[in-house]
Image (cartoon, rainbow, N blue to C red):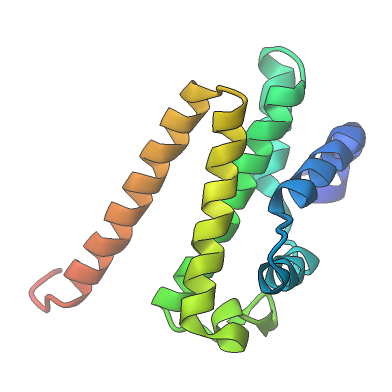
Length: 160
């Protein structure tokens, strides 16, 4: 079974272009927000979602600007959900580093998560990627409902 490095190798150029767009999209003119997003970007994960988007683009057509926007939106949304999840779970660590809420408190963490989500949605809206917006908006709705269902079920002791 191929490792992650082997999977990334054929699309290194595309991943590099994605990273450039992702970093640019996450930037803010608000100093505190920029510090926090830079902190998040330094602890990047495996970035599997952009990998899937790029390979899917190659499978069905070609990698283009729309592919990079989709990968950026998905990664921003994923990052936002992780920041929000740390607040919900009161987690003090993420990827062996302090979580955003541990360093900057819950209020800042929620607002940063909201910012990342809105930046992702805006990049699609600015380029009239309405189908992408519809797909991602439904995913966010489903994730939110799932998290709330989990909270609801966790309070009931009569479940098997």
